[in-house]
Image (cartoon, rainbow, N blue to C red):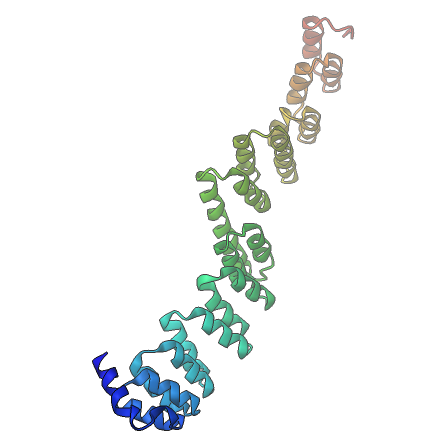
Length: 287
């Protein structure tokens, strides 16, 4: 501060503030007031000189602007990257129409903006990762699902699965449920539904799980899944899997004895048909 006061006293007599910007800059530079000298050099459009001053002053924000004025964008972006001027770096990238680089700057503190920029230019994996950082998992799923590269899609879904596990173990079951469902992990989704104690959700998820197993030709497993919530579906799956004993067992549990006996007869299980008829006093007589 004493040096600054000395400067003011010395140059006040020389009518410093009436001098042209470049002369002001030179006088300030002489006394090593680099930052203020840089400002006056900028005003005089002497950007190279301003650059040197801002480098000495470690005034990185102004240094970025000085580089920009000279069209030295790569140097400006390097300074922005190294010293954490992410917003300024992003705006500069947008100015030179480099959306991908702008997105990389936004990803530090504004991942949602980054995700949208990446997505706009078709960088879906990067978009998905930034949607995750912004706590938008369903949007992340949509982005990963658009990846043309299979490895990127798999890595994205793996990251999404880890995200959903964190939600699950921190008891955010509803959010975890949505992600598991999107990923087709119906077992985990069903577990979340049970934690939420939502009967309708439990039933619908169980049916999805059963349908998925059936689609993969796991008919017995599909039947077991569906049996408690939709026995009529379970009967169909058991029939598709030719698991007739399970069908008979389920029909008996539903007190549909005649249907169970008929099924036994179709399978030529006459002893079993007689046993069912005698045990449950069925009107259907077996010869």
